[in-house]
Image (cartoon, rainbow, N blue to C red; front, side, top):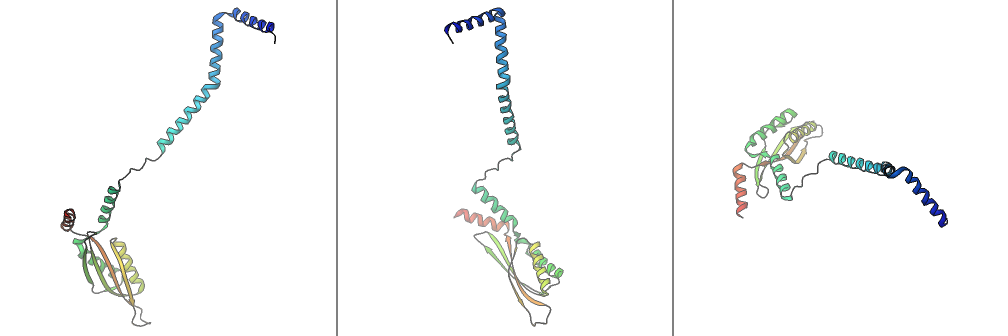
Length: 199
């Protein structure tokens, strides 16, 4: 391209724009910029708005974060749950009555029992060991043990011994040892807490 052809092209453009005036030139510039915005900028903005709306929806539908519990509060909560699961030391007669009723329901002979109360100082709970000599068929004894453990969630079956007098005898003699884990009375627990505070 020579200098003369470049000058000719510039002259043609000046004549073209001179024919329409300044207003037409401004309108052409505005039209071109609006077309550029429509084709280039608006789709990008629209996509960004869609992404942000999706992010907001996901944030709203996400589960709330779990509360952070301090180790001390968590330990206190677990200790309270432990004590609430224990039986009541003031109602051991109900426990014994429940054992005899469960034996009767299961078809097991239960005449007597040996009862040994104890206190766990460190854990601040009571235990009540109950040794029961029972007699009955193996399924009946098993049913008796299951019903006691289901009805008394704070009970543990520590030991079970079977003895049969002869091979032909249908009934079995068994010695069962249950331990009941009990919540001490309020006065005992208060004394234990006070004693711990003094140390």
